[in-house]
Length: 395
Ligand SMILES: *Cc1c(COP(=O)(O)O)cnc(C)c1O
Image 1 (cartoon, rainbow, N blue to C red):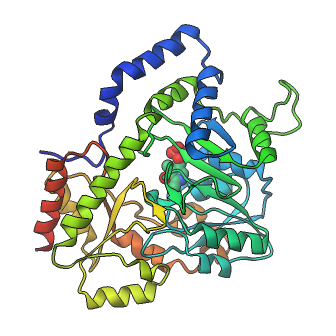
Image 2 (cartoon, rainbow, N blue to C red):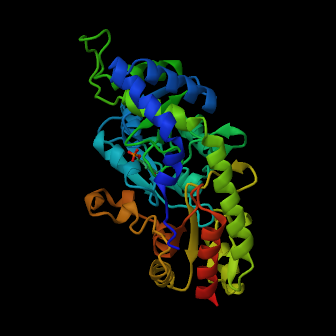
């Protein structure tokens, strides 16, 4: 039986009556822009996240751009962001005219290496953008401490981490702003593009709300230049339906992750990443060599609630592409997130040298990572098939 990497229909089909009802409600009243459904979804999101302000926006990317605009980032200002992430993290920095400075990541948790971030601070550094990659929080205490010490703004790219917690606090609510995505492949997946911008700061929340509608306040009076960053009423209505089921989706992803850890962890040459080696590339590779590891499984740290947007393994010994091709040949979905680090993208080649230096762990990960199916509706027979195929490969 083929096993897809993700099956959005398996999640949306059981909700067909509820989603159709939401569509018919909006169709009937005809208020497609902002209004009741958006207000309601924002209230539900505030409650879910435990945050003071939540703005429904057009996408996760626009949430990032809106955050950077609301913080008045200026041309030439530098923003620290990880080299190993989805493009939008740094693309949004460039779009407001600021300069991304790429920071290396941790080989254990895949998140921003705070020591490397500290080393790359200059007099022009204005903000830091941690990404909670694959659904696990970055080291927010260390990031907030660094930001306080150097007067930096913190924008959390929480596109992959809606509902993931750090020491009991929701990711995306700790820094100045948190940006979430509801792209269909994210854990809370819409029926199209949508996103959310969260903050606990009243002033920033108000300002972002004005910038979401072209900087207009009151209507047709512009003290600022914003953009059209609004979420559709239809998407808000659909997301309200899906949010009710969200904790169940997360629990199922966590069950799947626990299955892989148990089942794959028994295979020869398969080891669990060691949290003790977090942000310590040298110790990590030394101990992995000693264990003759072929595959490293991801870990969720005890202080984090990991929501497993992706279950990403590292395939050592230059065999990642071989495993990917092997799984594909068995019709098992898998994907490389991400094959090219941001410091190596052509569009950033013109950046000053210090933006592009010292991202060796990111380069290594780009050559080793492989994400395997983890979505909530993956059934026991399917995940057993994934595990059996990996067992065959390492045997
Ligand atoms: C998906 C994603 C985004 C962008 O979100 P969109 O809704 O697709 O615009 C930004 N950053 C990260 C890390 C993402 O995974």
